Length: 270
Image 1 (cartoon, rainbow, N blue to C red):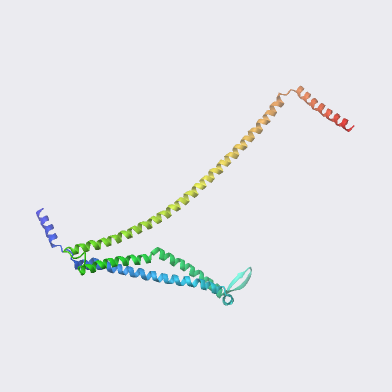
Image 2: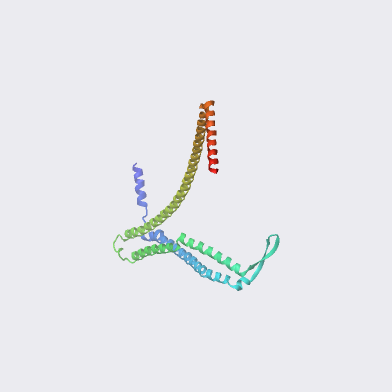
C-alpha cells in the first residue's frame, strides 16, 4: 500500500500542468482556426447560392417573355420525328419551346437552391461562427495585453473560465438546434399518424354504417314478410271458419245487391 501511494504521489509530481502558451496552442488557437474556417466556408456557400438565386429569379421572366415573341415561335431549330395516327410526321422544335423548357428548369433549380439555403442555414452559421470566433479572439487579445479582467495574478485561470464558458454556450446552442430539428420531425410523424388514424376511423365508421343499413333493410323485409304471412293466415282462418251454408248466403246477398243496383240503373234510365 505504501509503495502504491508513493507511485501515485510521484506521478502527480511528474505531471506537467498546462501553461498559457500550451493552452493557446492546443486549445484556443485550434478553436479559433476551426471557427474561422467554418465561418468562411459558410459565407462562401451562402453568397454563391444567393448569387445563383438572384440570377435565376431575374432571368426567368425575361426568358418567358422571349418565348412568347413571334420570332422565337417561328425560329425552327430542328425537327423531331413522330407518329400522329398512322402517319409519320416531323414535329418542329422551335426556339420558343427551348426557352420555355429553360424557364421551367430554372424554376426547379431556383426552388431547390432556396430549400438548400433554408435547410443548411448558411447565413446563420456564418454569423454564429464568426461571432464566437471574435469573442474568443477578443479574450486572447485582452489576456496578452494584460487588460481587464486579466490584470491580477490568476489571469490565466480567468482566461480559461471565460474561454470554456463561451465554447460551452456554443455547444449548448447546437444541441438546442438539434433538439428543435428532432421536434419538427416528431411533429411531422405525429401529423402523419393522426392522418392515417382518421382515415382508419372513417373507414370503420363507413363499414359500421353500411352494416347497420343492411341490418335495417333485412329487418324491414322480415317484418313485411311476417305481416303478409299474418294477413294470409287470417284470410285462411276466416275461410276455414265459414260453413258452406254461410258461404251460400253470402253469395246470394252479393247477387241480390247486384240486382238491386241494376234495377236502380234501369229506373234512372227510364
